[in-house]
Amino acid sequence: MVLDAVVPAGSGLRALTGPDGALALHPACGTPWRLIAASGGHPLTVAAEWTPEGLRPLTAWDEEGRVIVL
Image 1 (cartoon, one colour):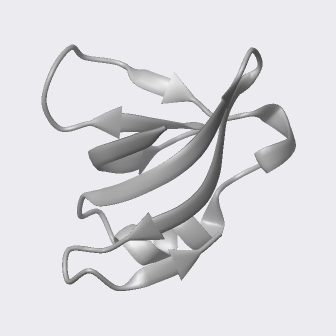
Image 2 (cartoon, helix red, strand yellow; image 1 turned 180 degrees about the horizontal axis):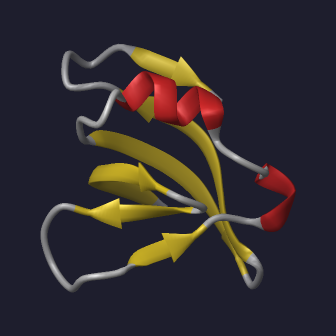
């Protein structure tokens, strides 16, 4: 799935619009340091695999359209 305008929040991804709360990341992802660094607190577009255990981020795009391989 592709999520637009999300920021890393603890062990999940939080949307800037819509309901409060975060989508949990897959436990095997650990702390998504690369995603946190790429975000810098700003929204990203993230392509992720949805699993019963949570999201597995695969790729992200920053506000300038640069690709970040996760």
